[in-house]
Length: 450
Ligand code: SAM
Image 1 (cartoon, rainbow, N blue to C red):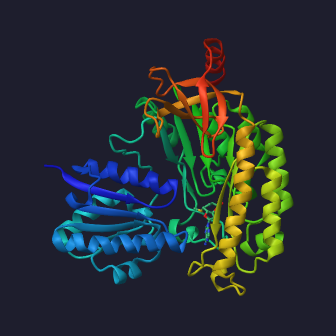
Image 2: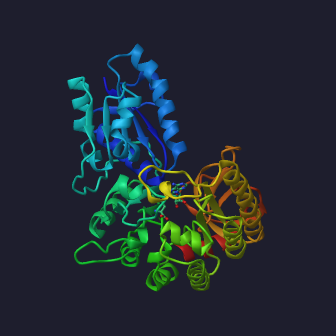
Image 3: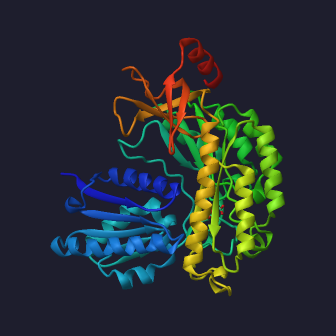
């Protein structure tokens, strides 16, 4: 009988990608996934260290699992990913029932590590650097239509608030050939959309010999037959080049959607964050993007309550949100991360002020985002259909190229995986409502989107 693996993933898309690979690698060793922790032989927590709250969730889950382990002593509990890399000692101290701790560089060896933990019955720790390996093993039953593809690992930015350079190591790009081969494999299984992932994905390729870049990778991926859409995240304004902006306009499968973290609209705060750009430079880039790619949807990350952030600094961030008119804003309260430069800065902002600023920015972003949604009413847009609507399984759901969810009545037709024209009839708070547009429009949209 197969061994059972229960896998819990916290954090970013890169962690989701890593978890799929871990499940795929363990499947090759006869482990099948189970949604029920009670029947698992191995439980792995893929962790995030970006904010304190993410870590608290892991410790509270480990507390729950302690009881399971007491009832089933043969159970192996493992902690992997960013928190494991950063705090191996702390994890072992606070959660002695953990048998296995390993960081992202060791993922390729997960099979061997799990077997060792099961065999030796003593804690196994593996958090050293390791060579870059492109992992492509994927579990059966993973989402067929859309996939994440990590194109580079690590981060060499030194933002003063961030732990990522310490958890994911140096920047290392996978070769275009390895990435294209992975995407071809995914498309052969029915995938129609890929999101290329990297911590600073627009710095892709500069470490390769010969060096290359994301624009060149777009061209290669665009040539994969059967693939309909390309997305990418996360970009850093510092590395955003005119060449990439041109590629966004010219490479047909690259969607009109761009996630460009601003973090703050105040130059004083940006300098203390060590972001390497000013608000004016950021806005210049936004103007270049919106000029080159009409209708582009923009989203961003913001940190509120960074040490020393005054009301005036915060108002400058609000101004940028109003000016850019983002489709979507991810706002985070600054979280003090041990070992980062900002953790030791004076003038830490009290929690109540962070909460107030967070609520305010979400309110402004919600209003702006709703206006952007309403502007789509009455338009016919190509929708990549990716499933049944959550609230009404009689309806189908999909996304626009600018990444908006649209639910519509498919009149009993199974349109899964197809790109179809949908007339947007109503903008709701978190999605759009639409109806299938006529056959003429369908032909036009299919011709335009491939
Ligand atoms: N590498 C990307 C960049 O620098 O633009 C994003 C990486 S991070 C996984 C996602 C977001 O988490 C960041 O853009 C930032 O807004 C937020 N973040 C990172 N460190 C944080 C901290 N200490 N407190 C609050 N938010 C944080």
